[in-house]
Length: 570
Image 1: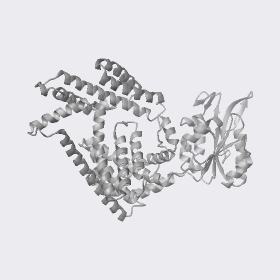
Image 2 (image 1 turned 90 degrees about the horizontal axis):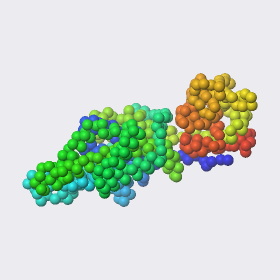
Image 3 (image 1 turned 90 degrees about the vertical axis):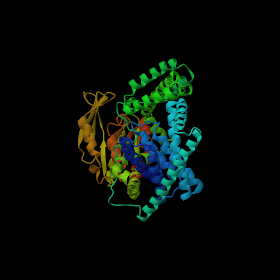
Image 4 (image 1 turned 180 degrees about the vertical axis):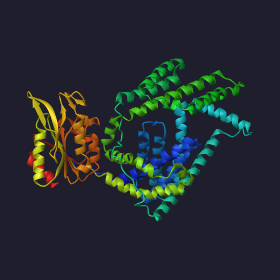
């Protein structure tokens, strides 16, 4: 039985992964620099840089769909971070990309489309900030802000200066910044074309196969139920704050926050920052002063104090809830969702970008240089894009995989030994190993691991071992596992056309056993893989390693000689 043929990463997704990874790297480098120096309007400056990057790259690759794909990859790369807060830049980045895409679809990939897209992208950052503040503090924050504004304009002698006018003035400023960024991005792209954006031997990128998308530590446990629980609990607590007695709401909120704090060790991360508590004090003071106190001639107002407390409780609730949600969003189930339903292209492009991220960051200009000389720095980034695209094209190549399957104790290893004998007779050098079993009192008691190149063997697992990882009654010896990992090193498979792995099972599904070795070998498409997998795990193995180019043979249905002929012909 055979699965559909190979699905490769489309060129548009490879280019989007280049733009997305470079974009995310700039966000990380410049964003950290701005954050550490407490530079005001850092988000707005980053948005301007984002517009410049998008417009500049569009001069090199004028393809429809590049913006939204690159924005999605960049946003997901920022959100995958263990410390990511979903309320943060993820939605803002993707919104900027969607608006740029929409503008260029409407007016075309020309200066008019870029100016409109840049303007909308920068205005979206203002809207994003407003929405974030409303979600964090509620509509009481608007009341405090309006009263504060009215007090301020009275003090400077312009009592008739309406808030609406100030908002339109602010929007105008953001539109101007968007136009400025788009124009500079356009000129930057034209400059890069003259410099011939392409391969440059002075830049060297590499993929880190060990850096896995959605990889989690052994200590982390995920639950889809908890994911939905957090969404429900957050919504319920917000409704209670707004519609019920605050004293009743605080009971439920306290219980929910206590659960989050005990269940997620990093949920208090944002509350440990001194700047947060400065905000708490300032906001409480402003609410007490301006909620409605000045209208009645009072400096202190009890209602305003209560509103300030409510807003800060709401902020604490949202921050801790979203920190908890960020953990649950790293659930491997999300990986399965991306892998299915037509999202495999996104998943593969995102995996490439994620694996290359450390190398990309190390090749980019230093933060100080990037801030002092943004044009030159971005030019350098554009020149490097050709190298990165070539790397991703190579990294997207996957080896051909043949899976040999059958039921437990059905004779898979014996069948594969016959297969390798036929292949070797046809001068197709086979590497890897098989794991023949031994019996004791008609019961499987031990498995060896046998190197198909050298013929050497070691004990892999047994029922009498007292140490090592256990699967059922068997424990795996460290010596046997190290022997297998040494066999699977790419340098030890030089000259081999096939590599046999007998077998891939529950240990590998937990990222143990041969899992790391397989990850490394997946970046060597010149070697064809032959995996031995139990029937009940075949689909899970295919999903785990995103194997789109795979044939599955059942030892009960397929003749070993026919399978060998197919492998040789391939």
